[in-house]
Length: 421
Image (cartoon, rainbow, N blue to C red; front, side):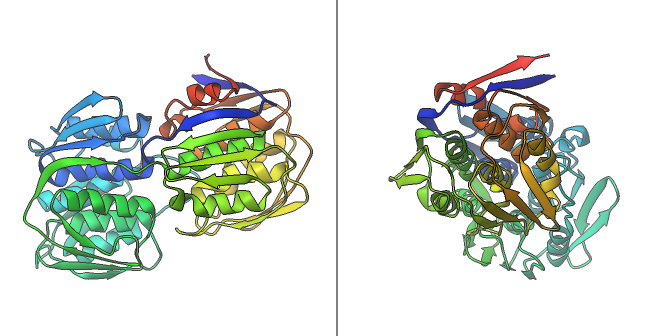
């Protein structure tokens, strides 16, 4: 086991470069199953979730080569298995994207139900609804989802999602790519990584339009061919470093970002008194005074992302006045980290879907534990802002989504070490 040891109270100064988007990578890599030939994917983050997905693909017969840091070559031409290794699948949430990819290419799939962060109940009922609308018979047990063609075969269809679901939108897009006819997804998710997946598939020969709106259309094609594609920068990694500067103070240039994707985050930090300057592909953030209270409600994109909820909560704990943070996507998400922040002195009262956060002068170092990926990132931010030493345990959650976080923060002047126990 390993932990982070953070001596807080140091403002952050310098430049940090953001990696490729985790949420895009974990959709694009399984989508390589649909491609006949080699995919060269650039700006791939070297994080544990990506490594697990590549292990799954290799175990299924794919040729996977890291050509250089951030660049992966994948050739799934030799893949024949429709039953990926369940032990690997259960290690991460996004492994359920294998269902849509395998159904599209092989017209069948037998995939274990996924693992990953356990901060809320996240059913896959909308995924199943989509597969059934595409003509699949679905046999779902407590451990597996088995997909086979129904009596009328697999085909395009119109699907209206009951709730906006990123995972279901991704899975249905992939499943429809190689099926005859047109598929229309209504009430689709609009997140940047949905657009990135559509752009990747279109680069390989798919016919997808409307990604980034609430109606996505997929016209099935017979085959997808190989090519080269670069993943977009990670909106949430960038937001995490912005929140770290807001909480700890300092002046940092955050490079390799798409500022438009960051508007939902930077606008809230500006409300809290942080200065933000947008450039073409970077953002400068400057903070040094007392933060102001604010109100945040998480929503699907382009609203404030649920994956930034915990990080902004840390900023609220040391802001002047009383802030309100309402979670509308995963309502039980507070329970993974608020008690840890309270151990550092935070004043947080949870009332249903809303956390009422009364700002204090200083957080204080303590021994805390990450319960999921983003909660873990929030505890790192809290440690950077706190007085004294913070010990963050269960850091395997954090390393699922943040590449070289210790090295990046150290380069900004933070006193943080990764210690093996």
